[in-house]
Length: 258
Image 1 (tube, rainbow, N blue to C red):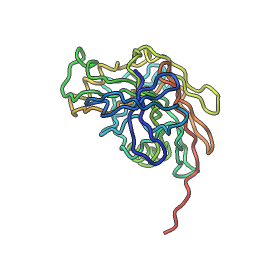
Image 2 (cartoon, rainbow, N blue to C red; image 1 turned 30 degrees about the vertical axis):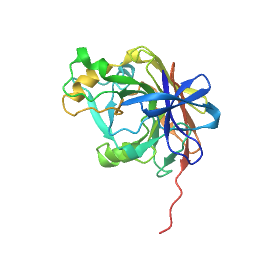
Image 3 (cartoon, one colour; image 1 turned 90 degrees about the horizontal axis):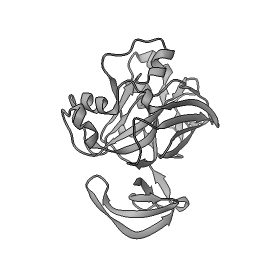
């Protein structure tokens, strides 16, 4: 199944099932039970929202062997995790807003894992039973802030710095799928997720040993080699086979008057 979250006009947000170019509205919550309604819409007639509204976004740093090899880093002994706030979420075709045009802003195309069940202290063997599905994410990062602060919170937590979507699917193998990132149509990243150093089951087991994972939480599984700078008005696309294309343009922030 391919699930979306959408809005028509100024109406309420709804979940839907995407079949081809048709959206069937769901009554209920995809994590806690739903039924299909008879309401059907053309995909082009609805406004796509971020497919989830998570309580937590857990990012994973340096988790692709190609990335580690390119940086000439030793392979890590354990996953390096960080958190991004829910306020950083935007959906497909929403704008990434650059906080300062003098800053170095990087794209990071990634596979997002959507948690489907509440889980804590889960073993690797049982980890995958807690996965609801997968989506495309872009862990946008202000490298200037990271260098200024020495920590990741501000540089990864800026408003609009977590594009996610366009849908969630449960029909792919998260550990064997092609991921590609393009800027203005030019391919910048292309790897299979089998290049991950820590597998999805290892990540879930490790994270759940320290923090409870809840339905709708997102794990951004790390980015492969090829991440780089975005300029104002650049369009970045993250495409994962079987999910679709997450497309966003970066624009300059307009200063608000006091």
